[in-house]
Length: 97
Image (cartoon, rainbow, N blue to C red):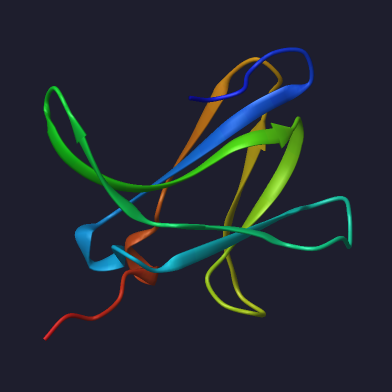
């Protein structure tokens, strides 16, 4: 269940299955506050299986998605009453094999 409405929105970060179980951190772009993290989980939907991290109750604003402690993977805007979606950039996918 996602808590949407008013100034609250949600974020879904889509990844590959290689990220299953890993944590992804986000933080507000305009604040030096703490980061929030969520684990990538396997999600079963009508059309198949996908892997994502879900942030269900975020204050509207712009967020940095972090690759590691110092390197941003990108940024995304979260709007109140809606779900923002971020596709994990291929250049930051873990090397398999």
